[in-house]
Length: 261
Image (cartoon, rainbow, N blue to C red; front, side):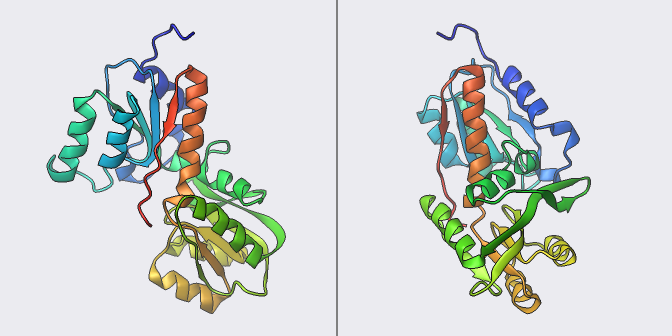
C-alpha cells in the first residue's frame, strides 16, 4: 500500500534528470519542465501528446493531479490569456492539475524517446543518430535490407491502430530500403532532407512535412513515409507515463486525442 505523499516537485525533479532537460537544446516555445504548478498531492497521473482542453478535461475525469505532455501550452510564444489559452489554464488551475512538458528531450531519449521507440515498433535497429539540431541528434538511423513496401506495411499497421493513415512520396514500390532514418513529428524539413541526401539515406520516416518535400523526394530518389505527426509521437509520452506510474506507485492513464495530422 502506498503511504508516501508524492509531490509535483518530486516527480518533476526525477523527470528533469531522467530526460536531461538542462543538457538538451530545444525551440523557445517548448518550455520544457513544469509549465503549470500544483500544490496537490499527486495520486494519479495522465499523459497525452498535446496540452489541449480535451486532454486537460480527460485528465480531470480520470482523477489525475498531473498531466505530462509532449507538446505544451506555449508554442505560439507570448500571448494574452484569453480564448483557448484562458480555457486551458482555467481548467488546469480550477482543479489543481499540474502540467509538465517534454519536447525534444522526449523525442531523442534512448529508452523513452519517440524516435527509438518507433524504430523498435517497426522492427528496425538504430545504430546512429539523425536529424542534427545544434548539439544533439533528434532522430535515429540504421541499416537494413528490407523491401520498402514491407516497411510501409509495418508503419501502416501501427498508425491504423491510432486512427491515422500513411502517405508516401518518392519511389516506394519494387525497391529496397537499405539505409533508413526516422525523425518523428514535423521531420521532413529542409535541414533534415539535406542531411538525408548527404548521408545516403534512401528511406525517411517522419510524421509530416511541407508540400515541397514530396517533390524533392520524387526527384532525388528518396522515399518518404509520412506516418502522421500525432501517431509518430504517441509512444514516448505513453511509455514515459507508464514508467513514472511504476516508479512512484501511482496509476497512470494515457489520453488518446488524435488531431488528424
